[in-house]
Amino acid sequence: GTFRIANGAEPGSLDPHLISGVNENRIYEALFEGVMIPDPLTGNSMPGVAESYSVSADGSVYTFKVRKDITWSDGVPITAQTIYESWLRNLDPATGSEYASLMTDTIKGAADYYGGKAGADKVQMKVVDPLTFQVTLTGPVGYFLSALAHHAFAVVPMHAIKKFGTSWTQPANFVGNGPFILKEWTPNSKIVTVKNPKYWDAKNVKLDSVVFFASDDNAVNYRMYVNGEVDWNTASPPQDKIAEAKARPQKDYITTPYLSVYYYAFNVNKPPFNDLRVRKAFSMSLGRKNIVEQITKTGEIPTYNYTPPMGGYVGPTGIPENIEQAKKLMAEAGFPGGKGFPKLVLAYNTNTRHRAIAEYVQQQWGQTLGVQIELVNLDFATFLDLRKNGQLGGWDIARAGWVADYQDPYNFLFMWLSNNFDFNDPRWVNKTYDELIRKTNTLPAGAERNKLFFDAEKLLVEDLPIIPFFFYTTQNMIDLTKWAGWGSNTLDRHPPKFISKK
Image 1 (tube, one colour):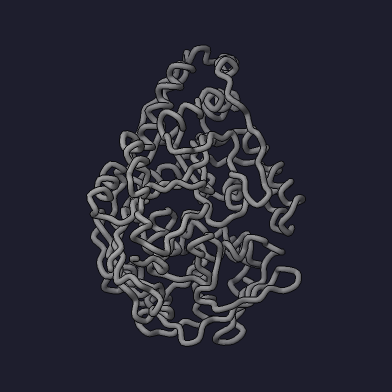
Image 2: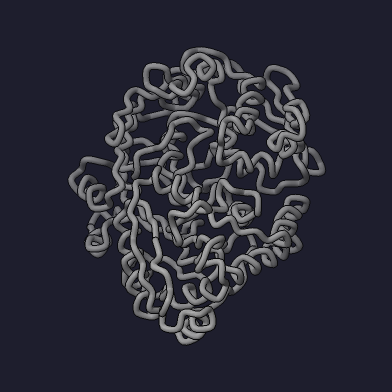
């Protein structure tokens, strides 16, 4: 049968090395398969293109055995050389991947190549034979195996890319190696995928097709689900429908803890947010409890730190809210009662929940700090472009969020490295922070490594280039009496390969 998904915003790309959003990753998991793929129950990595792997005693060398007779959808073989060329493409600065850092932070020689200090031959990846691929890491990177299910490590059809260039992801030119292949792409409407007969495990793929509908309107998505037009709604119901969704007799509104955080970023390199006192005042007067109880209402956890607890790691407490102290800090900064404070631009991407939160903080900060805030609502692609060019102006505060790609604190804290301009939108610089985070990749998992994470995050939450709001919960609507193979996990990963109708 056909499985229909209300997938959120229109994808910016289908090229695995150019995507960045959760909505794009869902499509990726239908069309492509990396060396490892996410387990539908745990979200952890399990074999994909590689049928097995081994790790050296010191944890720094991984050797992968590629499945025999595995091919692309056009019949071209996939070998160890394919993996080598694919990973090198993601690492090539000319590609423009936002996630090249997943490789530069882990693979020996990758940072020098990416930084132009060495050639590709210095990247410690090796084709041992047609079905054996080996990679040497910078140290015992404990999260490496988990990270391999991420699209940064995607295997891509280099032969099709060389032939068609940037148009290789169009339906007429598309070549994939996942359980489904691209049949139709109607921009801002839907993407239709159909079962890939050349997929190595096609006999265990039960769906005939998967359709991804593009809409960033929560009310539209909810209505489509209730009307039976989609089988899985990946977004939260609109605020006025949450009680209704919770009361549905089908028990198909599913929320679970989620390794993700909602936050706002400050443009710290221009006034007024180049002043720490102002940043503290805004954070201390936010009203996080009001946001999760009165606006989101879906079990989110207010937070003053950035990284959710995981694997034995618990982050620092952060700076608590105190409105009177916030007002004093504003006065010390030269803005008593908001007098003389410039009008701010708060940018957010189109979404009913983001709008509701933005309208709340506009009123909250206006009443408590006496400031004026202009709300700017943008489509997702335009919003990302604006946020990443924030050092040129255009915004003072920007909405943001982060969803874990793998289950390790590094996946949250690497974002704020001084040179990580793919994610560090505030352009925050702290050399001590950099040293602490980079050292974590030289240590195995454990208390010593977690202490480095803690010390680094303490610097982050006390200097406040960002304001953490809350840790998300997953918001899904799917009737599990009708569908099998969809399991809740803290990464909210649900590969369509495993989904079937009961």
